[in-house]
Image (cartoon, rainbow, N blue to C red; front, side, top):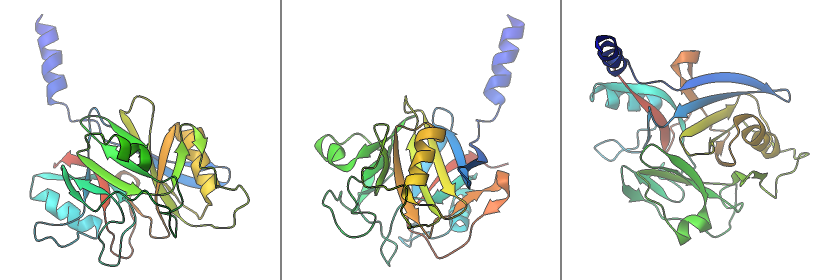
Length: 244
């Protein structure tokens, strides 16, 4: 009994698991991807500071978390944004909505239907096609809409072509079956949509995955000594860990 109590105390005192990141060569393109266990890790979205100014950078999010006695584990840009860095489409942060769901087709990648919503609940997450979200909105503590969907029920987006010559650094998010593990990935070299979507389907094992952005894509992963720089971002997605 004493041994059991000691084991339980050690387990309670041990730090929560942190997201793990690695780089995989997939058909000649290195892709860095991070696995987030939603049962043991906190995954958040950030857009604005307490003065309603967009955070814009990983560093400013890190500073804000420091005031809570926490820090960023990993992070990446979390969807498309306007010139004022407001989100394109639906955005929910800590239960508060900014921006409306967009279900109509339109110009650019966002309007390449089907697009979708990445929704984070309590200990689970899901990627949902936007019309399905509109028909039956789930309870999302955090949510970001983007497009196009990369993988839809195990199939690639129907408009992706293997021979496409549209190559960009791209990042996205997917959810593994069961909804308790999210995959955040970024290509380290320019790839087309077909290539990037196949990675989520064939390597990451996510039956549903969502494109977040291209060209401005970046990753913050201290465990890989990586802190991508660039123009200020809109929404930011990342994990939260205790300081120290």
